[in-house]
Length: 310
Ligand code: BDR
Ligand code: CA
Image (cartoon, rainbow, N blue to C red; front, side, top):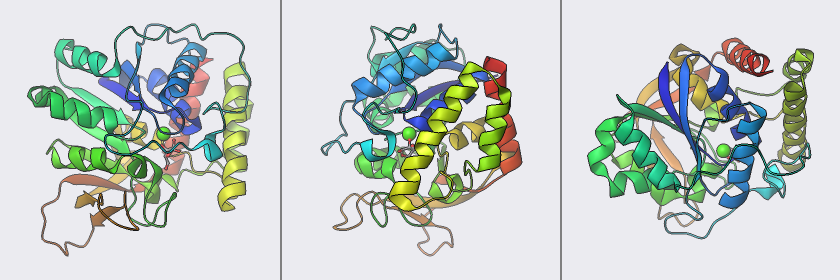
């Protein structure tokens, strides 16, 4: 199995990405690190612990990462994910999975140093933790097999006309990671908007018929309600599992090579990802850019994951 660290800000779609990473036999989830984004890092960390507890993944360490972006104030997405960051079903008490005594930074260093062989990092939030890791310890970059990110867009944005949320929260971090030269894949809105939780998808989760599947249905139903209210979507896009799916089954997320730069200075466009799909700039490709999702394969993997955990 492919050794994986998931850096996330759960978040409804992050929660589903966590379940996929825990359950799918193609990957081996070594650690989970959290970052501020959808909510404060405190809330996102509790949510990550909650999701892993529900999945019975009691041995996966969870460490708290950056409380704010590298150079900007934090902007949370409570309009999308609610006051807890994972609104919907209510939970009593502390999650069984504890918070690691290590910081996310320390845990990342430990896993990269100690795992035998390079590790894949999937990031489904702002790239703050990853940028810090690369700038503090460039010597460990050989220990990273690839970075696969849910963020950016080849098209328009979802928090400003041109910026996607994970890019918008910390454009400086995204810029640094893209400049690192490490193998990088961007799963942006243009592909994650192909992962719509339509009624038939929701019905398939409901048919699993387990308490965990019921919780997934409640999460996706909450997410659907905010997407409907805010943007008039008939079905919400389940962004983050697409990045995990790209690692699990690369052929299910078709990519093209392109140059990607992140706008950090734009007056109206901070956090925009300028993806040079047509080679206008002559700048060399620095990323695999996800273009097309095999929907059937994607939902089958996610449904199998939730089924296996029940
Ligand atoms: C991204 O922003 C967050 O709200 C989601 O969890 C996802 O990672 C989509 O723009
Ligand atoms: Ca996320």
